[in-house]
Length: 485
Image 1 (spheres, rainbow, N blue to C red):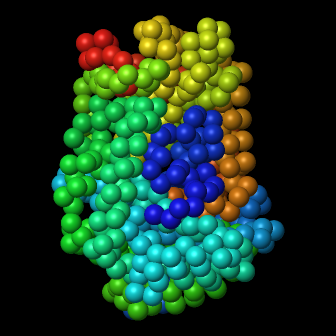
Image 2 (image 1 turned 135 degrees about the vertical axis):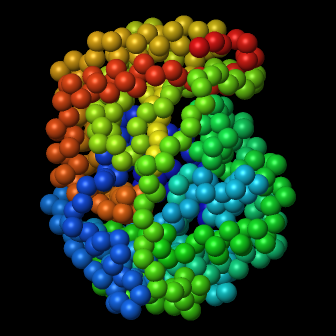
């Protein structure tokens, strides 16, 4: 893993906390990860015997022209040309994350993310970082439950270098045995550091109590028990088996030319396992037709001598393909998005019981969740939980107001548009839209979908989701018998 900090709106490599509701990272992705068609090339284009197929996906008045090319090996390349910018963010998105790991390989995706920057046949780890830093650029990567992203941000004139370095790292890493041992120690320290951050850990505990043994309930980083015995052979097998062109999306945004990017990507992958891959069709997006079995609502407490109690209360919600996600986004903002939200007003402004309180949604291919986080003095935990439950019950029973609807929609639209004012966010929109849905919805279409949300839409989803039995995760100076549902 490179040492430079994450850029744009993406999380840092190990920071898997949900962003506070109302932020660009939390509010925008749900509606920006679309299911509607916008004229992109069909999934089957670029099959054996065909040349690369390129189409214009969108011409956005708020940005630039989006083009999409499918290579014969099934790899997809998307770019958004924004001539007014002087930078470019280049990313490689792999549709493999922690949910794709066998239990004994828990953390393999994250382990691999670290190792791919440790050296290739052409470059050492120092070469990879020094070449990008020498032109003032920055590189980073992060692992999620359903994908892994590697990216670099550079001046437009340095894009050829960024493409060559990043493609080399992702496609041709040597995974030296010594580097495996070095990064094993780094990751074990990272796991230990995470355990010392209760405000982060409580979200992982909530995923565990919600999903149980399902891969979505496991730690992205893996555990001491899985990372310690993991071998170089296991990681390399996972790498070569899983990192294939049909599950890879290359995305770039900024002052660029699409055809030039396609040519440079092909040149950079040539002679590597990815460049030599046989003809294939792009892998379709994960289906929403399967079902994830949630555990019955329960309580999970990690006893820790902390100054604050960290609480997450939440339950199942919508998957990312659900058309009602726009209404849920509005509801999320009304309840816990920003200082004007119901929960913030009731718990912090009126009573001063917590410094941080917000709601958030998490959405995956076939399931999702809605939850509320609060950090408060341990003696106030019961009172804070009671207020959260009361606010959720009142909203489910009586709905929201017309003024709250207007404000919630405005927050969604504003966070989306403002979040696209840098090349990193634009690159992420392309990568996520293509990888998670196999298509891309225009910004104008997203704004129309948000505008179309009605009061009845929000109140209906509130009555459904907020009355679902919810699970509780707690980190603080308590034991399991302290809390009940």
